[in-house]
Amino acid sequence: MARAKKSNSGFGTFFFGFVVALVLAAAAGFVYFRYEATPRAVADLPAPIRQVVAPPAQAAGSTQTAKPTPLSLSATSPVHSERAFKQPPFGISEDVFESGAKVYRQNCARCHGTPGRDAVAAAQQHAAPQLWKKHSHGDVVGVSDDPPGETFEKVTNGIPHTRMPAFGHRLTERQRWEVSLLLKNADQPLPDPVQGILTAGRP
Image (cartoon, rainbow, N blue to C red; front, side, top):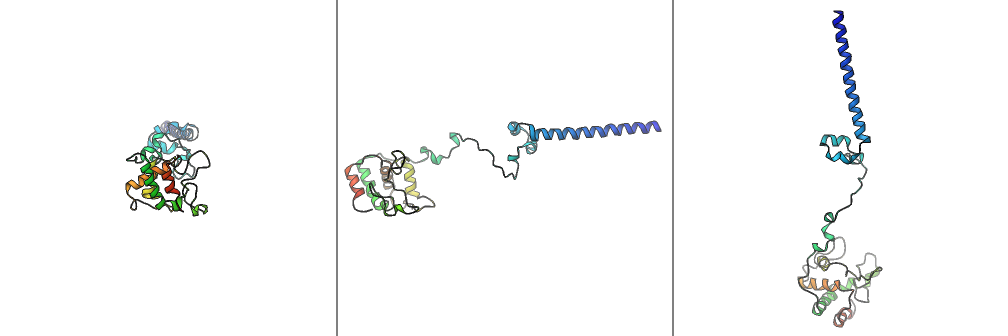
């Protein structure tokens, strides 16, 4: 009886030691992956393990901001791509510029000024940009560096949270293109008749 009791006691000690060893091994693994292992392989681990070894900045509810990764060209917003805008259905000519100048005088000059003359409200806070004024840096005038399709879109739909209204229901599509093409060429010498239309009288 004494021998059998001794044998059971030895097995219990061995089992207890085995459990302790497993717990220590698991704790060591957790500490290693939590604080020492490089995070580059975390994405390749199964989901349950990713939740344990993910860096603190990626943990749920973390207030830290993950370091942004550079955007590739394919990830940039199409709004800033010239190909995202419509293309003019016709080219530029003196007739197009003259028609665009008439549209501009009637609908735009009061807020955006004319060549050589800013609008009356130009000095006020939140005034509309002067579309015939040269930028402080470079040779860009007004929106001449924007694609004509971008200007067409702004004329058609307006600009949210500004005083720029939508002219899609006031002007025909051709008129909107004419004024857009005119403003695209605001940094270029314009024919005298076009200049005369733009500068006649007060905006």
